[in-house]
Length: 143
Image (cartoon, rainbow, N blue to C red; front, side, top):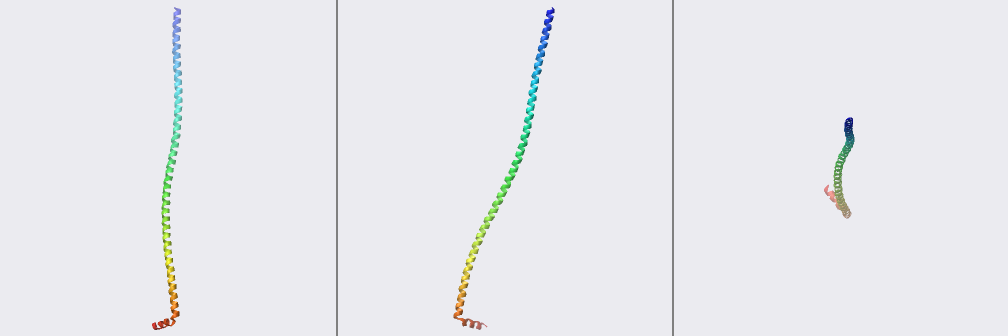
């Protein structure tokens, strides 16, 4: 009987020991799971921080893109101004050409008029040389 009681005690102790081992193993697994969860949480936190930095960089890129768009708009405005100035410049060139042609025409006309006047002066001088008295007597008749 004592053997039987010892055996029962041993069985109970073994069962208790077995339960403790199972409980220890379960706790050990839970600790490992908790470590993995902690590691996953740290990874998630690092990922969130990285995403925050990326968002800040994207905001910077967005602001740069807006500045670039503003610069493109300014460039377009400047291009339009340059085209307008070029158009005005071309108009002035055309206007100057027309004025130059007009001046050339007037100069040629003036030269012809000068030649005509010189010819008339020569004719008048010849006439006066040929008929000097006639002119004087005509002047006397008028008076």
